[in-house]
Length: 343
Ligand code: CP3
Image (cartoon, rainbow, N blue to C red):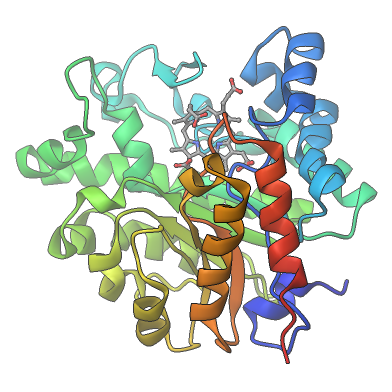
């Protein structure tokens, strides 16, 4: 497989920077909305649990825009029902009972995860049969999953994981360890099924200070990354976090290969900090894509110019694309990146 995405990550010479977008399959695409309404009765779980539909949705941004990498259509919460959670998407995630109501003791590290998420591995196999474009498998970081798993009606800003940590460190560790073991198994199943890279989403890590991050999130991320079955091939490991410019010292200890950056972190800072020892993936503010098409071109060029000749770069957004994004702006983004020749 020849791939700009994989080559750029490992610092090989590439004729142009590769591009993909966080949440590139989703509600801004008319073909996604049509499929959701006509083939899945508007249900997110139905789409995710049908390998044919999930594979078709994963491929939609490739067909429309020719992106250089695909991300599996699923969710960070997909493996959690196997632990004992009941989850609906309305479309925001809603848990029947949170981890404390269920009792952390009662949560399982599933021994039947392969069967419980067989729709995910089937989806991966279908996608791999229909394209050579690299496929990114993914999961949630234990800390970010805990933000959802501990949420209750009064917890608007995901303070509950931090509260639990200060109330009962052992219980916090028990919950996050169970999540780590589940996510690690979940990523290994995706690797066995054929994904070309894995990504961990730590969206809410930015609610932590550096010392908190090093205790409440980092150990579990390291544990997952250290336990991946990547011995047979060199499989890129990506890590996304948001509002974490101040946490870069910690992020560098995660054991990942690619830092997927929020738009608040200046490219000049990332380049200096990561110094080609890590690939940088990012970091256009997705809100730019909701403005004028000329401004899209200008803002994309600003990033391309500031990245300059940094060898390990993949263009992306700083967070998921918004659902009211005009398609012409996405086309402009992709064209601008693809027309920017290196050398
Ligand atoms: O294209 C892709 O990026 C692949 C699919 C993907 C989804 N969720 C599909 C989805 C990925 C990688 C995720 C990750 C995810 N899920 C994260 C981490 C990244 C991030 O955006 O911060 C988080 C925090 C979640 C939890 C989650 N799932 C939320 C907050 C929501 C609702 C709001 C939203 O952003 O859409 C979901 C539901 C969800 N996950 C949808 C999609 C397409 C919307 C479902 C629908 O169409 O009804």
